[in-house]
Image (cartoon, rainbow, N blue to C red; front, side, top):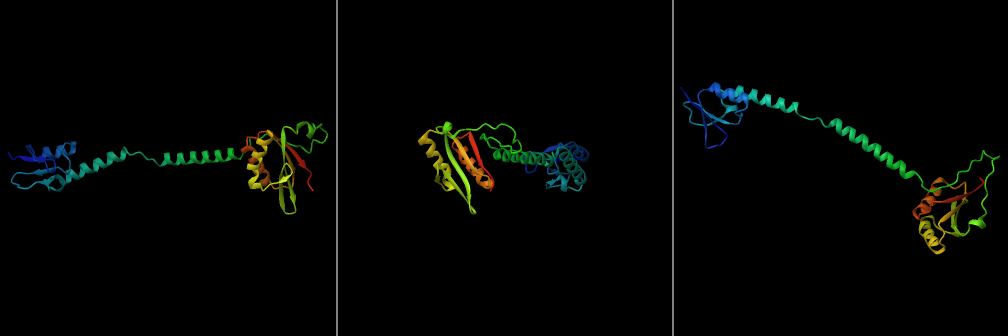
Length: 208
């Protein structure tokens, strides 16, 4: 009976197999790989199974079967990535919205409730608790004053901190010209918030 020899690629040891049919069966069962080497009866050189004319077809079938199994176990990550991107967008929008909220308590005025009794606050009664920030239009520009002293708006937070440390006052009376742009109002409120002011008394001026 003719004997075949099979070994792993480059291995010094080889296994003896009685027939080519058993080698083909071993390929189908995964015992041998297409890159393993075979030497048949009367052959003097080793040849990879996938290149040997007797086993090339069986080796090709074994490779195709291996690819099919790999495809079946492949996890498609695209849907998971899409979900993560959507969650990230919601997270960014939520953070952006929360950053716009103001934790400073500002009394809301309701012009339509003219008949309702509106409590009036006497400045003398609260003067030792509040510092005054005013914002009014002077032509096309906004004039910002802190305790009646003109202050560049970009310096307001630092100057406000100095006044609070000097006077011990922790609340703000916002004397506001309602013509002042909302962006300037927000900057002033941000300066107050940055200094830990959580109570602002609003004294709006009528629209001119």
